[in-house]
Length: 162
Image (tube, rainbow, N blue to C red; front, side, top):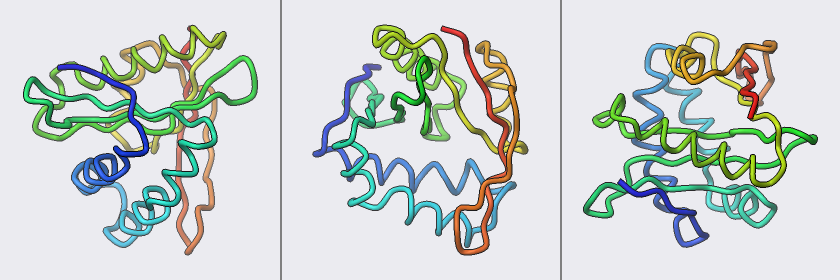
């Protein structure tokens, strides 16, 4: 496996990975309608392009054949922390260390940029809460965030000291 920075040319790959991971990741948590809404609003070509052009960094994990198997996205937030916005791995390869490697890449990048913490939001019902806790994240709060169209993100806010 290799992890590399994503570029604007990788927007379609990120969209494809999101389309393949989200329905599985959120099957027991969100309605199909909400998943569709969020994919459209968070992974549109224009949205991802603007994020990349405004300092949001993405990384792609690829297998030995250079096939994409996961991605992460993060950016600086109020100093001294960074925020992990996205971390998704293809379902068939979860638990094989891809997510951990992507997270380590994000943490290393944030640390090199002077961050002392890495924050994220994760749905309170998502089994990924345990994954993040296992890797050292602490729950520092929670919130119900209105994302439009009558949908809410019911999240924990978690932080990893770097």
